[in-house]
Image (cartoon, rainbow, N blue to C red; front, side, top):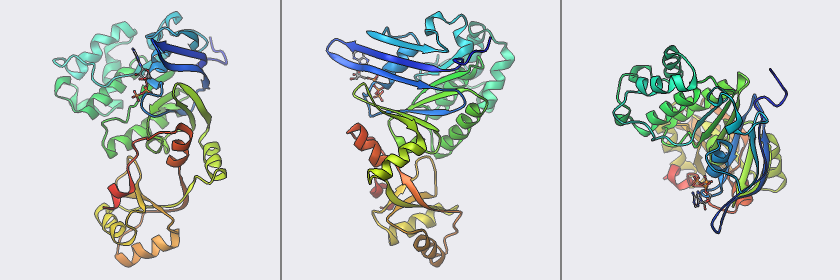
Length: 320
Ligand SMILES: Nc1ncnc2c1ncn2[C@@H]1O[C@H](COP(=O)(O)OP(=O)(O)OP(=O)(O)O)[C@@H](O)[C@H]1O
């Protein structure tokens, strides 16, 4: 049966108190299918607690958390509706990646053939017979995602899936999430760094201290940043020659470059016009593949909204 709320994740007046800690307070938002939504907030904002309530792992103090109009615990076959990855490390270390999935397959109600399909989807086919105990954090993230996808769920809830991934892994994750959303799935992905997901998400739900501070599409957040004078005037410069680009940036614009998270050989240049960046790269013999004027780096508006630090890379880390 298909209804209009299929795949809709809904949180209404949700609160959770641990002793004297108000982890989540009167939080309401909705997330729809076919889009990637960033669930953002500084460390301790209440993201994980909210996801745990959506999954029936934590009982709300008040309010509701539903998926397709039902509480997770009331879903007849939850594994076929929701895929969730909350932690990257909860695998039996002695079990191979493939066996880990094969153990779960009957619980989710899928065949063992599906295990190989999802390993392929996350790029772990070659490591299928290796023990998960020897996996890097990035590989464990991939295996976590494979587990999430096992039941071919309509809704994906992913807690900080980019953690531990190298730039290539982040780029891969970005295209996988976009692909899964394009298939009509609901993709909710948490992060404490907005710029890490800026190129992946369609919508943002931003929380701080357990409360909602902003929910909109990404273009609406960009418009807000411009209105508030918080959109830094930046040019995006990308080159296949990462080392050359780094040298150029260090010489020409020290302290004005920020790495584009998840990309090698790409920087945002603050207060540098595109023609200026292009001319300097040409003069230095650095091949340019992208030169985008007026890109909005949203980290400042995120900081203003949440009143905290996000852990985004500082300009000095790139330009030094
Ligand atoms: N089981 C618990 N008992 C007591 N306090 C808790 C519990 N779980 C979470 N908290 C507290 O609730 C608040 C929100 O934590 P939560 O893990 O949900 O935040 P988060 O946004 O996911 O942060 P992070 O990015 O660091 O995981 C924090 O102050 C945390 O210490």
